[in-house]
Length: 339
Image 1 (cartoon, one colour):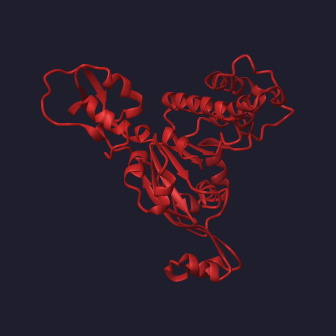
Image 2: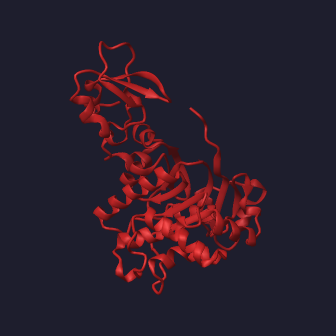
Image 3: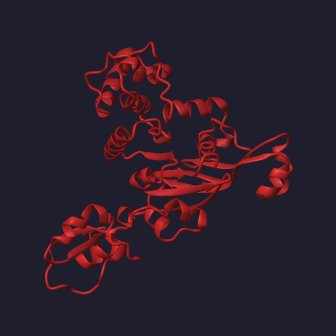
């Protein structure tokens, strides 16, 4: 498998609130949660290190107050970290000047938040074109680009509508289009669908995945909904009390949780939603083959195809056959047997 380059990395990032946060980190100290609390400080982000590779959807999740939103705001320096290192394409953002950070946010980062923050006096097209106007792009060019992304998010024909004339899901599409107008390398989304009704939320997830298949952005996505996380994520970071307790694929989190806290998140997840075909491959040469499946395909998506076939399926990873999968192996996952 080809390794993708790291787009964003953070090393030992802290955000401590209180009267003297720097003192807690002086001389390389790594204070415990109890030490932070006893000193009348709050450890919103504690000693977080992680890598986000190019083109992946990296989901950060945790309960309310776990530090996930604060961490993302530190990564974009909307909040100033207390300590650590944040590397964006190798550049340390904590050493960047305010003007340099403004340039990076305007031209290379896209941000979508739970509250759409659309400008009510501007039309859909004008809202989407607004960040390009801030960049100084001329009207014809910015409107042409805005029309492209409006079409990308499925709002063509609504360009002249105002936010009050749109549904919640349509307003969120405008927010997504506006963040994409600047063609960001790195896309931050902080619980963008949590205010939507369940049916609209699922439609937006599907739309989001469709857009990602086309654009292949590097995405950091915050949610507290594990079903949403496993549907969208390449990898997931679970946070608790400001610290990251595990980073893994959805499958690894469900099958090998690092501790009881992670296990509680995954306890009620249907295994077929996260277990991949590659996890249950068998070796040997079967008498016949019904077809070929990707090792990364999830059992839920291929179960009917495999179970109703009269022969096993070959399983490929990176163009090479690594084994085969049988109907019995798929049924074992469906009925809840351990994998």
